[in-house]
Amino acid sequence: MKLTVLLLTAAFLNVSANSFSQNISFSGSNVPIEKVFAECKKQTGYSFFYPSSLLTVAHPVTIHAENVPLENFLKELFKNQPIGYEINNRSILLYQKPVDPVILNPKPIQSISIGNNEPQAFPIKIKVIDSMGTPMIRASVMVRNKKISKVTDAQGMVDLQVDIGDVIEISFIGFETKTYTVKNMTPVIFINLKLSDKGMDEVITGYTKLRKESFTGNSIRVTQDELLRIGNRNVISA
Image (cartoon, rainbow, N blue to C red; front, top):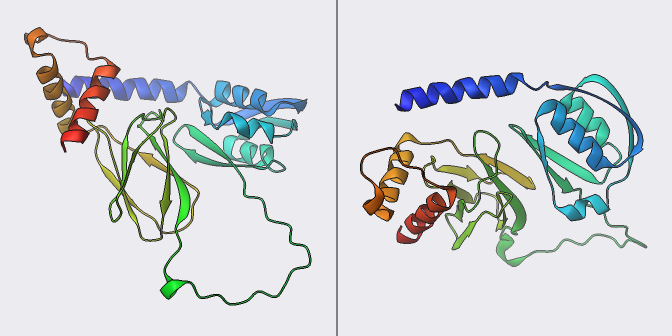
């Protein structure tokens, strides 16, 4: 049964991938940037994720492209914008580029020693997605060597304060747990969780315990809310 599901899923993914192109054609002058996002998604299947406030700093764009690779198109699109981007699978996460401060009458930089040269924490964003690029809501994100544990929001995002060398553990019921070691100050980290056969057995078992009176051995429908409720229960009990 699992093999049949996997084969059908693979066939579906193959058909979906072939329905979109990695190239894009677009021509417009002084158009809102969100209009370009919509056309890009229509032609390539890539989805854009960004806070609504980001559009307030974006400028209208003038761009003319004919069958251009997506990566080249994005570089041209954001060349003069205060917006950066990261690509993972079919998700494009946008963020505001840091602005270099303007210093008037700069003074010579002095060497400052900070408490035993301890590393200073810095902010990063973790975005958790599944194999289809869909944001995973309420995934557990934990910094192993610190007492920090959070869950992702509706966009699959979570904000953390970390140091170089910190180990971040990402988990979700029914999916393989992943770890990520912080090696640099990359502002956005994409984490792609893969479905686990063992995890799916745990989900079905948990659902059976939750709704034992309605389970008779026949096929049953498990809603997303019920799966999330099971996942939350397992996290708490763990």
